[in-house]
Image 1: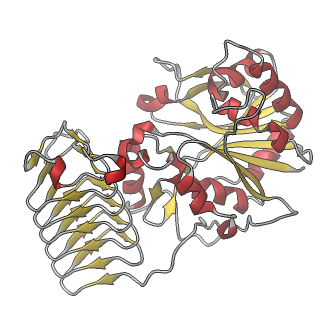
Image 2 (image 1 turned 180 degrees about the vertical axis):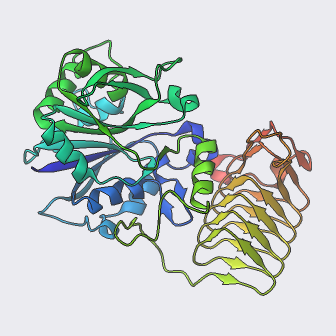
Image 3 (image 1 turned 180 degrees about the horizontal axis):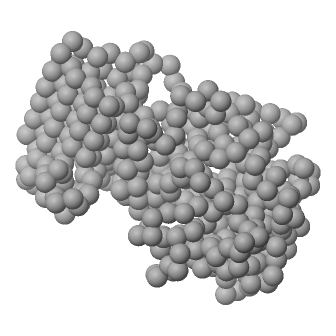
Length: 422
């Protein structure tokens, strides 16, 4: 059966704070080398799906630049599928900004149904996981389903963030509740949907014609299909899956990769996570530097006396002599100055910390409470600055934006410069 994959990649990802101030959530760097969307794209090609559409909206420039024509994923094809990126457009009818996930698919449905695929696989571009979609397709066909949704069990404390699924013994979905305040179970919707083309066409059109709908798959499409008696099957997934939609979950997913038995093997040659990479020299670690349980990407330079523990350094990071980095994520081209300290922090691209800066003060003294400190893209922190755990420094901040040499844990520092001055 012919399957077309549609990846929803237009999310603003506001809960990721400064990481999505200048890029869409699926384009956020991950694991020192990748972008978040690389995992979904790689799942497609590793599953033999080479007909892929991406629906983008919020700040898509970084995403489009990263994906290009799809070459790293073998998706730069003209006649046998390939990759296409669609963004909202104005037309004489009702085309406009996407109102929800279902509206995004509805507005592009004329492209989705072109050449009549049998099945449409709707995916989120902002989850970290490895899934063989071929097994999902076989399950869908075996159960003669109209729609199959992938499900997974999560900790009960996190269940309210997701749609809750009740499933019978025959894998049929009995009920679906989107993000209830008091979830009745911890079996949740993963945001992976396999539709028969005609079922999706009908459901989207009915939703489009409903003025009271929020035009969202979780809030509107799925509950209506379940309640209408459609054949909705629940595909059980038991692997590693995380929605890196919050700062804490993004940080924790990196720490998971640094565990003794990481849940995803990035060295598995049978399931390669493809990405666009740039040529950089091998990492340089000087004599006297210490690196423990960390991921260090190409182009990094680690100076004598530097100490790095359980951290992820993206390409081109420079760590000067005597600097200490613990349980932190540093994105490309960051510079950590001499004798600086970085603890439980996320530092965005090209941020520069001068000598003796301390970021994340008290991160290990919060009584078990996780307080991640964040530093935005292109920010420059002056020598001797002390930043307490939990503080947020926005993009493009420099010494003129600071009124003190101590930034408290509840502070959110933003630049005072106009956009054309940055």
